Image (cartoon, rainbow, N blue to C red; front, side):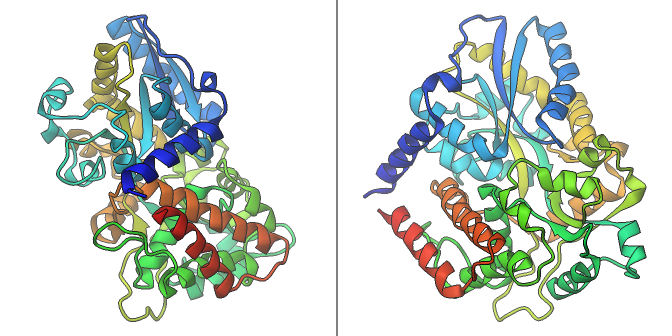
Amino acid sequence: MSGRHRLAALLMAAALLTGSLAACGEPVADARTLTYWASNQGSSLEFDKQTLAPVLERFEQRTGIHVKVEVVPWSDLLNRLLAAATSGRGPDVVNIGNTWSASLQATNALIAFDPQAFERIGGRDRFVPAALAAAGAPGKAPAAVPLYSLSYALYYNKRMFADAGISKPPATWEELVEVGKRLTNGKQWGLAVEGANPSENAHHAFTFSQQYGGAWFDASGKPTFDTDQNVKAIKRYIDLMAVDKIVNPSNAEYAKNESLSDFANRKAAMLLWQAAGSAFQAQGMSPEEYGIAHVPFPANPPAGGKRVNSMVAGINIAVFRHSRNLEGAMEFVKFMTSDAEQVALNKVYGSLPSVKAALADPAFQAPEQKVLAEVLGSTASPLPQVTTESQFETLVGAVMKEQFANAANNKPITEAGIRAKLRAVEQRMKG
């Protein structure tokens, strides 16, 4: 089966998974109205609605265009985007994870940001090059433009660390396990994870694989899932629950940012996340209560291991070709990526602006943003911009979800078992 046919099959499956096409929403013909699917950036869907409300009101006051927004959980967003791409029925404007850019670009459902399109939103040179590099396949006009820039970091509770006699955050995975055990007791756990979130799982699979010297695709874009490095990478992550016992087994069911809440409510002492500070504050946790550090590395990296501790993370904003209000949709993209709104939005979420002028604002010189920027500039690596990347996240992430469920039920987690699952999904990718 060709790559194009495989992608078509995935799109059709996504449409079926999503349910009725009506769930995606109808295109809006009214030139005074837009529909917008926003990704869940904060601690809850309601937090994001409240954050976006004044922004959308400013846009309406400026343009007369009303924006109907729906905040979509990450666990649902990719399937819904693929279903909308297949059906031609859905919102006008969407947020997409930047790792999905090439996959969605291949559907031809999103408008291409060619030089003319960039000119309509203020020009290509306004954007941070690293962020723009994750907006589509190399050599093609981007299928989206950057909205929020992110990287992973390690958040830790200062009081919990002090009470356990721990003076600094762990720099290696071995140290993380050691301090995690000291921080785990009847009332709290050492680390919180999102075990049922395929994309979150896949991000960590990518990072661990890089640290083990592995790769999920070869130079031609073909999947290489069942390698020793990838098997060990996944087992190391699942073993935080299965073997090290520093993750609450209930985390195997987390898929909607519940781990953020556990950390903010002192149920877990550490968290691996992207720009979580604003979400903590929304739940009553002050910045003085937590610290932020780089994600750990192996103490003794294997031969070929790379010094990578995050994928190049971020959220892009895109416009569906099926929109019946393309002019309004482009105006909305221009507004959301304007200097003023980039400062306002990223300041709330604690992420980094994707336009140069906003990135220089004093609001992004706080310790959290400095660490995120350091990681992006030195130890982050982009996920492969290949058309089947979204399948990687869906399939490998689901394998890890199943492994977490097994760990939560005290079933053994073995390299042989992981390898068999990876081999099976690789064969599905190859058709």
